[in-house]
Image 1 (cartoon, rainbow, N blue to C red):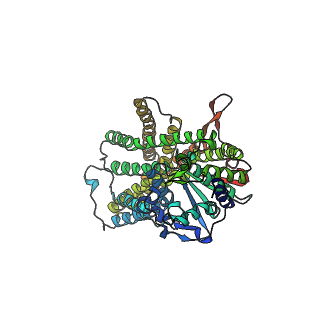
Image 2 (image 1 turned 90 degrees about the horizontal axis):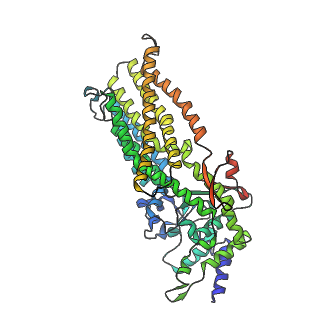
Image 3 (image 1 turned 30 degrees about the vertical axis):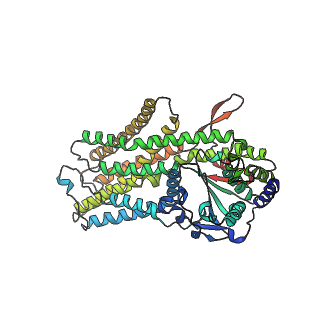
Length: 524
């Protein structure tokens, strides 16, 4: 078969979005792709036997095999297993706290050793162990497509049929997950998958295109690990000397969060790089393996993938130039809005901060164990710790995180000198530590105000009332902060007339940014 005839044959099948045969369309449960630290996603041995024939695929995983495999693996694990991990670990932490309260689990009498409040580390310890175990072992059942598992890599005929049916795989997929890295937009077949998915949606239907930078998972996992380290370390510090306590807490906070600062700044630099790449996107800048090999492998001629993809794009979008314009305009606008706001949404901040809740489950169970049988004192002390924990987990720490992320976003640029980069990270940490100490002082001021205002014989006498006052102040402050700083991100836009970047705000109405051609919905 001549090269032109071969390209026509491949184009005809690929552009039709129909499978070569019905048994070619296959899916695997997500846990098969995530097993052994997502080994298949890291280029592990293909296991086609794990897949099964289907007519419905929940999510098509699109990624570049030229990117960092460990970053992809951690992000995929976090996307599919972080919520079950948070639920299972918190349930385990609750059980551990209850067992400690019932004196089934051993503990130390901290209040007799220079500690102002009783302590326990059972909830935090059990929580982080269950979190890690569930994250890596949870049997996620969603049917997904991953090329190395769903296309037979050992039978050359079925492998060819699977590649020809790639458009059919996309047509059968309800959503598409793009694990984005810097190599993604430079790989021609990645662009083909993206374009085929957009074309395969019915007119007027919403396109559930989900884009996740591969740095997303490591950033969130580093945050959870840092918070666990902080809460465990801070809970072990004696409280007799407040100055030593607060200073030590600040130092621990700075040391534990430094890797997170560097990671988040790198994440925002990656977003800026993606923005620039999409603004200037052309198919000419993409690479394909066949052209690199000069269309010869093992002495045999190869059809040109570039010509096949260009013909498919012309068939689907009218012309390749029209598709390029679609990427540079509608896809870029929607995508950057979602990517820029990802870290600034309240619901995204809560789950990674779950170690804060574990910490206060520890203190509540320790108070209950110490004051069991004391009656009202038991009620007030346990309520105090639970309300205090809710205030810090749901209000104070999310606010600190939001400020931290905003600073990392604004100061994301990497200076030429490494020492300047260290100073920028230190500046961000200093601001966060200052806000943390301010929150601690506000909590302390609420306690002092409560002691001065509430009469000794009042039913409201007790630090639980002070913590309610602290929560009442923290909640509106957090709501206001997320309202003002958690939306409408600012990102650079390239102006070809001035040959430079200008800054513009994302649309205030999210519907303006999340609706593209044919109702396209692109989310993070």
